[in-house]
Image: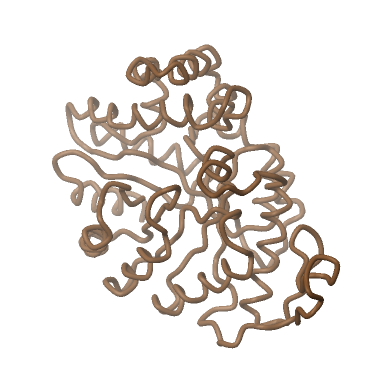
Amino acid sequence: MLDYSRGVKESADHVAELERAGIDIVWVAEAYGLDGPSQMGYIAARTTRVEIGSAILPIYSRTPVLLAQTAAGIDALSEGRFILGLGASGPQVIEGWHGVPYTEPLERTREIIGICRKVWRREVVTNEGLYPIPLPEDRGTGLGKALKLINHPVRADIPIWVASMGPKNVAMTAELANGWFPFLFIPERSAEVWGDALAAGRQKRAAELGPLEIAGGGLAAIGEGLEPLRELARPMTALYVGGMGARGRNFYNTLARRYGFEAEAERIQELYLSGKKDEAAAAVPDELLELTSLVGPAGHVQERVAAYREAGVTVLNVTPVGPDPLGTLEQLKEWVS
């Protein structure tokens, strides 16, 4: 996952270096920073092999057809190396930054997936539901015409990944998407938290989609005495669990509670929303940081890799830190091959 703080050109240089070290996928976020497609297009020009994924493009800030056009464009620039990562984000960003009502995220995601695949197959696009295409006369001029994509995409089956956490959204992801982005994935507790939703979605999954890809991981560093590097994840974990949503509407806080950190999640949120961000970070349990990272001696990290594999993770999604980040990637690559 690219660091928000890097500039576009610096990030592309970094990805080119990581590509030489053997990474398979780089994920580019958007949130309320620079737009993702600009960065991904530039990375496509600077690389030759690595897959380039959006993680994520919010479903509210672009029309479904524009999402499909953007994906087809980056897939063309990268010669078939793009992954369209979608997600609903949250009310704070969608309503506070984009000024768009945060409504019906589940059905929006479902419709967008279907529309994107129609566009890439160069079908004449029509849709009923939250996104009526063409727009009916009572909502516009009545002059709308059903169209299909002018260009021929490099691929008609660009992979779609979905970031989801709620049981219904996870079930929908397992039914329709090519891949799933969980958050703060704890492999030892994944079956308890996600198992039923994943099973429900997989029962409805079309055979042609193949197995569901699952990403999981966190900070990664291999070596003796590196455990303090887990602290790098503390402020971000506090931000999400404590501040990324109001009381009762923070999906990340709910997830921490479902993992068994009920009291800790409540305390983090109370502190964060009171403006005590440092204290909120200090309240993040050490156990949570350990379980959501791959930091420590080689034997420990190998055990973590095995735990992720056992939990069904197919893409080990890591952020290398510490004295030898490229060496960490090379070692992990050897272990997962």
